[in-house]
Length: 184
Image (cartoon, rainbow, N blue to C red; front, side, top):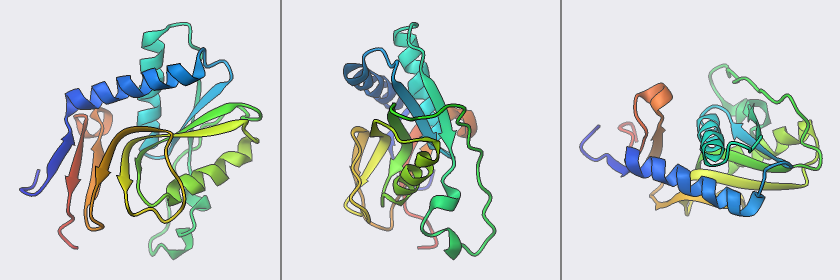
């Protein structure tokens, strides 16, 4: 960690935040029989799996369908990339027609990834309702009118700051760090 980096969620707070989000979902979705959880690739899938696992640890009777959705070619900036794009894997072995969908991503910033996720999701049917769950909501720099229904933590940042969500599965520990990239 660099000198100006700030941890805004440590591993204990991270775990508590996931538990709180799961309980909020239970309040609104009851038995999850008509609900599907979709994580946006690449990092929203970690949160989706954690949320699903937490829900099932609370009540083992929940049979929650979940999937992973790649939005690479639905983004409005994919043609502007200088390097070749490498899409992630989409794993959706169900239709979402008339289902309640909980779309999940780790950080909501400009809203463009979420918009791309909404477009990509429609390939699998027309949902009854779509809700958005994010671990971190970066406010004040939204490019599109998108707002999360479930928020782990709201943070107020300047444009040059970045929020990095670290996952135990890939980074060795769960935490969220706010930092300023050196090249900016």
